[in-house]
Image 1: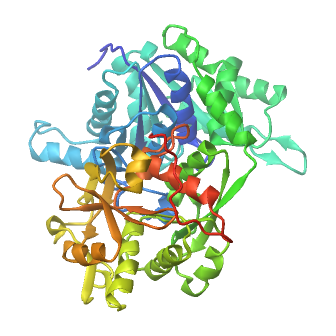
Image 2: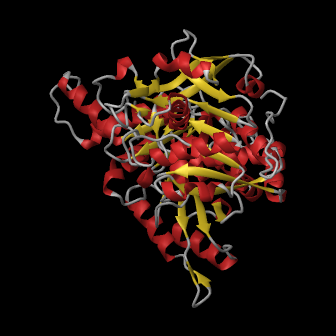
Length: 548
């Protein structure tokens, strides 16, 4: 492949100093301003973890698992990419070390290396090259984020691989962008650039001289700091972009655009200079900053460590709020505190039960579904949130507590949720019902009012499903099954009538929501919640009649 030229331009985004700086937001924002110029843009995350995918990672430690339309379980940064560049990505946009090493070993077993000693260089790095180039085909620009920070042992192969890329595809087709952090010392009231300088030095020792520096800080970068960064990091001043903490992450592309960095990048990559079309995005940011009315939404959670655990759900709620000109105030309610849940729910205008696995916190989520049903509080259930709604309703209809999911209690008398037949006995990782599946919606339903169409496609991530043995008795007692798989075998959406909004789906609508185009279910859930009056509960549905 040496010396091979390509039309695709590659931008590699690395990070240093500390983790959690926002490389994903930075890369996504860069993708946004370049796509706004009419370029076709694709994005890819390269994670150094030795896992095969993100599916078995602990959400409390690594954040949510984002599912692509073709069923890949990926890092949450792919959610940022999709929301910013408004493009449905595929599994090729997620590369993780476990996949790389598994492929290299498989190649060796097949004799593809012709007896050569298998090494990090060239065999592992060549597999990384192959995946990056394959993912970037047919696009003008391919942005690749390298997970972790420069200097991490597990990331060294990726750093070496991207160093080699400029020789493989031509220097004029490669740009290196590095994200650093400038700490602020309160005692001396100054920003310190030394940690950032050291990070760039580490990157240069690995053979990469960054073309662009993105500088994160909680304080503005002054002229003295800019001069010092340019001198010691050997980066042009016009290629150093100060990214002070923004009021909303959706403001970051606008701040980038103001610096002129997109034109600098286009010049470096020999791309035509074009004007950005960011009016709609700018209007969105203006709306975000101007909303003053609020609506309180209770999220019944069991992963309480940090917001990343439910990132796409929270962003979907906020986007739906902006659509209705309200600010969504998210109240975390611990699903394990069953005795206190009702007291906390009395202070919210809408209840959302998200997906999850295992028995921990399930009774608290069932209690939340019961409270929403009995008190006419708008309710949106997602995946497990649909299953607990079914369990709660069935306990009421069957007049017994011996109702549960087979996942929680395999020996329960009434398993209204059971394992899908094709999931019995399979291994844990990557084997669930994953990615896009079709659903047919009944016209006489709130779901139809939301979507405005009978045929939809949504992303899934589940192993258990509604038990059809209980379909008839639950429907006879008022449960509305408004969405089914095309063959009618799998329940996808359930609802209740005579309720302001009580809808739950087996799929994950949060993965397809956009900041300027909220998902129909989230949009109508927040619409109902914003109109909810606890002193005078409404009994008729509140919805946006304009189909999404």
